Image (cartoon, rainbow, N blue to C red; front, side, top):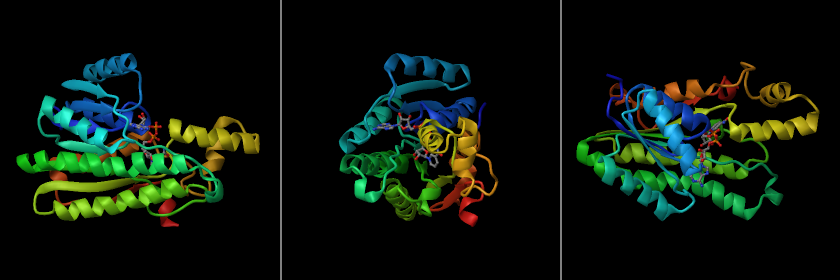
Length: 262
Ligand code: NAD
């Protein structure tokens, strides 16, 4: 019997990077998984089979584009029709674009706000009524160190991540009289496809090889001098999703190699 045996766990962007590490960790604890993300259905089917082999009681994939708020709500409704109330909602999907604000494309701003912030508003609003019905729920929002501090050329991302920290607090207050909690995880740099793009851009600028460029990119941010691992983020998400974490709500959990201690 795993720690999350038969718990219905929905992870947006659960098919790659940090989201996949989270999905895998829940699978290993016997969860019933619903995964969102942008992936071909056949590849997702293979991935789901692997997660079932690792211990998930079941795994369904849904390729909803979370830029569409109504579609995000429908994603949750479909999951509930199949599985009943969602026990753990992990709002993890996120995208990035790096450019000075004067050159920041408006469509990128809109997409980043939609996926990194508004999607969590829609999925949470849609999932809460059934959570209230069962009297239990855990909402974990993937914010970022950029939910607490800013960096240059990331205006949309920083705005969205600060926004999701605010949303986290508001949802926590509105559910405080129940065993539903809402918290945000604030990772530092984790080597995933989203960050690999920034490492490649830094490689072009510096001429360093990929590994050295990665460490050079994070050296001013992480006093540890190391990337945070996907597993370290997944461990934090499972900690917050646990039945015993009911007193932790409305807070931010930094897993950032010391970034925001500076
Ligand atoms: P990733 O690119 O590997 O994963 C992002 C996921 O979001 C993918 O599964 C993708 O399919 C999904 N997604 C993107 N656009 C979508 C859309 N329109 N509709 C539905 N799903 C969509 O990136 P990651 O680094 O694993 O990022 C996961 C989360 O962690 C993001 O919210 C990101 O902002 C946050 N984060 C990452 C880092 C880091 O260093 N990698 C640091 C702090 C926070």
